[in-house]
Image (cartoon, rainbow, N blue to C red; front, top):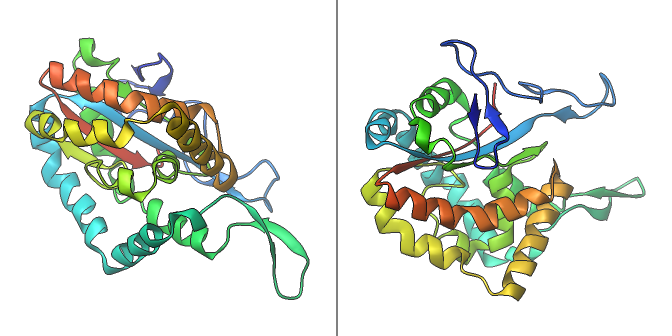
Length: 253
């Protein structure tokens, strides 16, 4: 069984087959409301220390999808919109639609941010991701984060919490990254700068992250602290072990 650093099962193994999802539906299914209910899924972000040889094998497969998503004209348009006015993005708000009374929904700016942050270009490569995680050495298995969000995406919450200026310092694209050990060392200063927060800044960042986890999705507020407090120690640990890093935001299947 593959576990995250907290000891919680993130991926389970069944022989040599791709690991099934643990404790949550493996694909989009009707919510608890029944066939007419909303569609439910689990968005997961895995960030794990991996050997350079794993990076060498998966980078040609995963890297082009990450770069391609970042370079799309629509992606750049959405990024500029968020960067220009991040304060306009928020959770559910009481909106009045034409011909009906007020209801709780995301406004236009928040829907645009949701589109930006939920693309998941690696979603079609779960098999490769699981295979890469299976190759993590036994004594590195604790060097990982695996926050999840039901009906949402955890890195979107981290981005909303940090804001575009700080979030842009993180490598990759909305949690997706394939870094060699050298790249991990080179990016450490920017990662530290992105997450080096005063007590008040951290409180505000956590509040915004929780807002997105729990309003746009149905997440656990504790996952905000997992990300805000866990990324830098994991980066340091990877540097100490001369490890690469594999980061993937996807819907396990």
